[in-house]
Image (tube, rainbow, N blue to C red; front, side, top):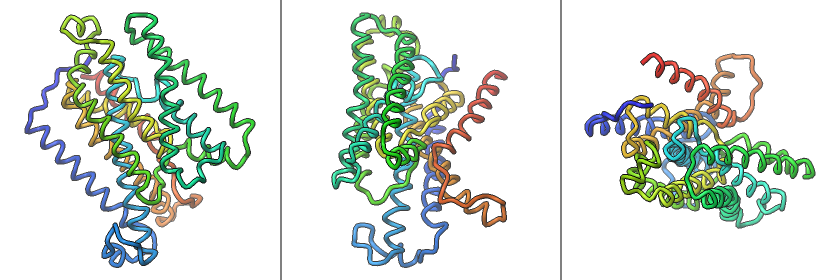
Length: 350
């Protein structure tokens, strides 16, 4: 399905360096543009100190955390998508295909409907409830796999689609009976966004993403074998059942962690790994670090367009309705769909 990996160490280093330069350029541009703030005063203030001015609070308290969150969420979604595509042997798989995102969204919705989002422990409680919600579809899939005594990627994929439908229907039922204000809040969150204040949520989510990412990094050889065929992987000495469980659990943790903060953002875990696979081959040992970096760059660029796109268009005289920002989930869908079609056409020509 894909050509062998031929990315040498020097080309990998060059590619990673270029991606880091793009990330640094975007990461330094986004906090500096837009808004009427005194950048000299804001930058001169230490980020860990009490913010003496509004400029410092806006710069260090909202814009810098937004950049870091975009890099974290984009990288986590791309790596999770890479893991799901390797296990299911399907380049169209993404973190949401198995119902993991729907389960995490259900936990977030239950927290909002119960009024727990206003609590002082909300930055810590929301990820915990998302983790609990993501365990529901994962447990169901594991039970089904244990009952069949044989790993089937197609069965797992179809079961995940059905779980998505069931959980989404249940969430719609909860919204139907819920208060209008809370339903509106959940609707805005479901569009996907990176609007946070402070570093509390980052401090909770970042260690979880780091641990799950390290686990997946040490499973890249197993991912390569599973990408071929489960039977072949078993003949080569891989414990297929345990490897699939470890990879699926780590990818589910990545997905639920970032969904708790940013909401369900699509196409990052689909487009980025597939694009890198078309360019550099199918070796997951190389694709995982590339997906981590380019996933963050991709989401950071989309956030740049959504955050300041309307402002720049309005300043240019475009006849549009001025709002605060376009949710990044909409930007990723608008960009990801056409890009994915172009990649398919290029692959067909090759």
